[in-house]
Length: 370
Image 1 (cartoon, rainbow, N blue to C red):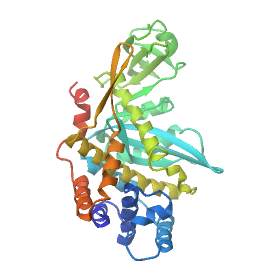
Image 2 (cartoon, rainbow, N blue to C red; image 1 turned 135 degrees about the horizontal axis):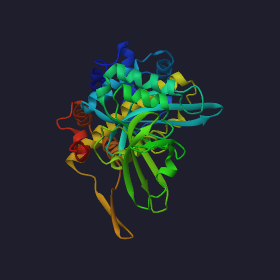
Image 3 (tube, one colour; image 1 turned 120 degrees about the vertical axis):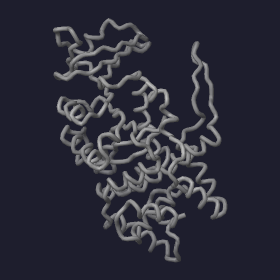
Image 4 (cartoon, rainbow, N blue to C red; image 1 turned 180 degrees about the horizontal axis):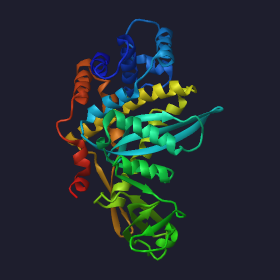
């Protein structure tokens, strides 16, 4: 399995072959169910060396190897084979001892789950500056072009005047929530007032879309009040012609990704790596492992769909999958590792092959048709 993955990795990632083989071995360890500690990652190294020697090899990898993270992104994007993606941006952070781990992620959205393709550590525990966000996304654009991004979804912290200018300049279609004290102007009106006052007359469960101006830029505003009278307003590009709230709900897929990276999957918080540059390298292992797992979940869901659970809430029937694509793909791979070598080798070949059908289209057909 390590050799099969290695042959694919060396097509994208520059570096000494023995180091790329070490990377391949760590990824195999993680998708087979091993822990993310150095000793756990070393289990995939298939030679007769002592366990301590294998663990030291993993240590040296994180200390010495240098990644071109755009090459890593290219490998992951190739697994899914789409021309463009709905992407989401968000941060996740935690504290290990006295060290703040604060990472900004760019992910591709695949239904209710996301896969990380690019990330950058922040040198502090707070939010991102506009300059940091621009540099972050610009590096991705330089590598793949702005056309790789169909829509960008982000949280309310990712909105500022300069950021809006950057998105419009690069023709990136976006959907981002606004704070209630943001001042906006509705088309054909003279007054500039807060978001809260603009949509104050909205009734519970009512939805409204208006064209207007934010910081002298023409945009759309979509507002909704839930049954608790809580207001949410999304600002979006004029060019998006689909239901904005239906689109924006896919941003929550990044929260599920964070759960799978942390306690709900790889337990990356327990890696004990506190040097940020090394932690970024560990995320390469976790990101590629996540991509392989989700790709397998998509494949297996096509062959044997995940069971649907129906639950009645008041007068509405809610349907949801019994488990996620990540869990489905992960459990399936771990099961195959209990079988013979040929079976897992064949599965790995299947996962690494370019998809025959568009996974993206199957999840977003109702959006793409609009």
